Amino acid sequence: MQGVDWFPLWLSLRVACISTLASLAVGLWLAYVLANRAFPGKELVDAAAALPLVLPPTVLGYYLLVVLGRESAFGRLYEWAFGQPLVFTWQAAVVASMLHAIPLLVKSARAAFESVDRTFEMAARNLGASEWRVFWRITLPLARRSVFAAGVLAFARSLGDFGATIMIAGNIPGRTQTIAVAIYDAVESGNGALARSLVLAISAISVAILYLASWIERRGQAA
Amino acid sequence: MIEAHIRKRFPPGPESAGFLLDIEFQAGPGVSVLFGPSGSGKTLALSSIAGFVKPDAGRIQLDGQILYDADSRVCLRPQLRSCGYVFQNYALFPHMTLRENLAFAAVRHARLERYRVVSEMLDRFELGPVSGRRPHEVSGGEQQRCSIARALIGNPRLLLLDEPARGLDLPLRASLYRVLRQVRAAYQIPILLVTHDLDECLELGDRMLVLREGRLVQTGTPAAVRERPASIEVARLLGLTNLFRAEITALDPGRGQSRLRFEGFELAAAYLPGHFIGDRVWVSMPSEELRVSAGARPGPNQTSARLLNACQRSQSVRLEFAGDLSVDLPRAEFEKQKHNKEWLIEFPAAALRVLESGGANENPG
Image (cartoon, rainbow over all chains, first blue to last red; front, side, top):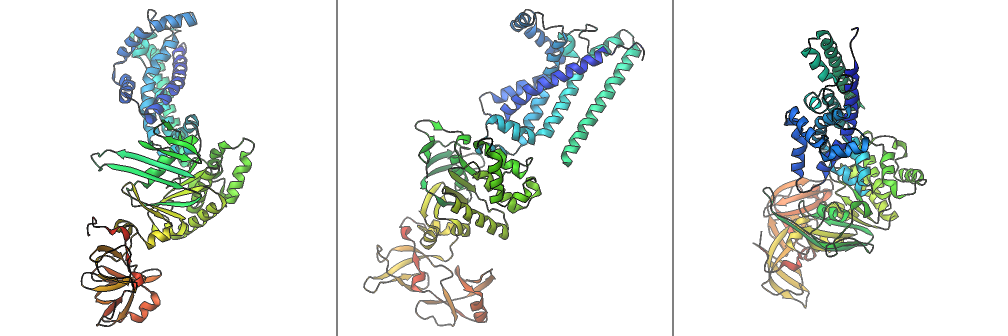
């Protein structure tokens, strides 16, 4: 284990954490809107939100490059605001992970919100609760187990992204090289020891996360 | 005071025929019962008033405030309507204790007042000892009281109850009625209660609004409606027995009498103002006002009948005779007569009630 560079592991965990939190904010909001509001084109939005689940990751990466690249409007805005381009930074890896995490979250959170008995929400509104309060005090707590499970899945998905990340964040050791990319890189360059260490580490962490999640979920059901 | 004119149309779908709700009513303090069979639009009317459903047309006004007005495109959100709503399954939030359920609803009170208001409400509805438990940890009666307390804690100007007694066993039903009577006495607000149970209506209702297929067909006190159903449909909705078609064969205003011919027998009844000889009318004969005796030869206002069945009920015995006639007897009376071989049914003139709007357009059967 001597001489193994653990930076890709820490980077991946950091990227996955930030990406999961950001995806929760966006995904839960979108799921709540889809579950509660009727508007034209709603199912189109739903389909668009699911698109990243079926497209090849490299295609997603390409789209991201087009939308966020230095020549794009967003890219120029970002560069003007933060003084550096977004692409080929670890922040870009966060965006790539979010693109994978959000569809998962929207899908499962929408189903979770829709499975909450409508009368509870009606009762809360009837008692004078604002939509914001209905969401935080009624819908989210009642759907918490499914939302939590969805969050864990999103985290796991963020941890393991390869295709979109390498397209938009690149493979810069010590800066943007996440664990999936690092493993590929190690195998490519014949560094079997490094690849094995990283593979074992990420496998152990994934098993631990999934076990922890199911433990919390089971404990929640007992309470 | 609630004044409502609600019109809502549901287009026919693959699984249901089209439906049109079109009702107009007013209700002051006290219990007004929306009575009708399933699918008559009772719950839809409540939902429209509470703001869960938007009507197509009409206007809903509560204490002079407009909650909904189609013409001026006003449709207040449910949050702003101050209508307490008690749901059929109580809809207590399962992840909160009873106290938290009430506190959730106490947002209309000042922050510092809330704890005291909630505690008072818990005491008033005898929930103090279980206030720290979740809804699934308390009895059905406690859940029921909690849901009513929660609906009342924001001082609503109207209380809506959607079939609160549905699926309750008898003791629970009795306790619900007791609580609702206390609420009626303590709060001077209109209470709208939806039910399809006539006993509940008679027990709690100050007024009764009978709904059928989305229309109001009769209003009045529950006793008056039961006594004088406006039409054969209402009589059937109320579950009245002994509904028969008859023809008026004689009218004698001098003696205050009339004669009605039924299929197979003729009876004397009270005088029927506003009718003519030859009119075909519907007659209702409350089964507890008829009398039976042993014998084979019918006297005046009697007919002989064949007993099909004697059903034991909690308070009485119901005798079912051939030809859809039924008579309710007190248990003691039945004990005396149960060995009768042949039966005569006697119809006192006062027991024959002609349904007023029987009109010629009524289809028999």
